Length: 541
Image (cartoon, rainbow, N blue to C red; front, side, top):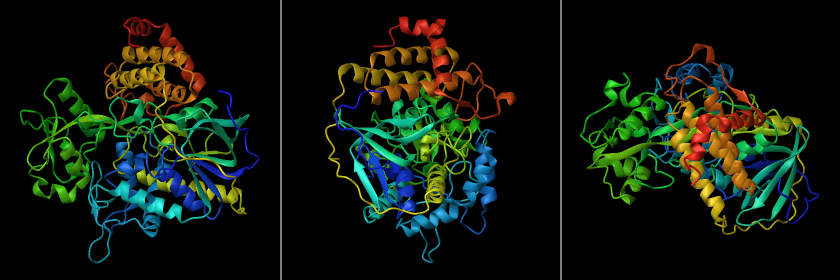
């Protein structure tokens, strides 16, 4: 751990410190009110959060013809045989209550004239159960409502401009977070009785992703470095239809478009999903992503044709996607949209139980950084926001039970004006570029032992070059994913290996590992022929 370069830890100890200002962090903070809570966020509150970019909505069995049991069955059907059934059923049963919470916070979910929620269907759902806002604006609307609610809640202190770097521990007990002021070297310790990691996923570890740059695996790495048990890190979901327009992050063409009847074609206009899966464009995401990946790799290209299904209504029904297309010079009303798979969601993360507790004392995790087992090997569409609010609420209830008497909010002053964040040196910038390129090439939609061993060798070499903890955290998170992918010698859900293309019934189980185990796999990869070839080939450019 780097030395603290400025102020010593303040004597003030928070009841709760939450790392992350996305849906998980804000919902948990609101549920903890009136208990004093500090929310640490690297970006201005509500920005830099993947939650705000979610287009589809929240899956919940709230119609009379639907049921929590049916929702649970659909979730487990997609999950590749390794979902935690008790967790899935708990999540689907509490879905309606959490949607009502969001309505209470002012989220303007689409409703008909009689006040009933309007529901849509997405891939692999057996019923219309996705609660949306204006077609593709659910994430932004939810975050806007929660940010407004947080600003009106005096028990919540939001500290902007601090990037979490390390957990402060006494043995297996977490006592705080060490955070660096964004754009500088100043570090502050934030001691607390309870720590909640709500830091998001790993999208920015990949060269093509639908996630903001803040989703860079730092929370996962912080927990791993502190000794937490990790679960299912090899399972990464690639959204099939990101706009292939050269933007970083890649704009998302919501799955709801395919739910409305949009089709996938190659550049010659041939509809290729018909020959791949009976569900065609509404097959599970991993199936569709691999199909598009193959079309692009073969030079035929892949395009989402919405002309017949949506047509002239595109600007009003899907304004976010329409705006992204217009910015790229594409008119989706009149022409197909070029698409490519992009890293979208991490099913793996820090192992948690039904109350969000991790294997470390005083540490909870919620949202994409956590792995509850609800998603298994492949997440059902629009279950991500649902899982986030269900388990953020359960964490709040768990913490309240452990500390029944809230204290009065009283915080020391902290300078949290956000500084310029672009002060990485050339070595660090080059390391990040190499890491993202390597993850996309070898730890992406299609994997194999040769590529994974080579990637791990590259990551080990990169880690030796870098000193800044924030960069090391990214590299550690990348190693975790690659090592787990190398260890699972089969294909299942979001994890596909072309050297082991079939599922192995003997491996129909979740995977668990610590950073010590990851390091053993990584070092063996360095010493392998594939690792040595990768290093000799100059993949560290």
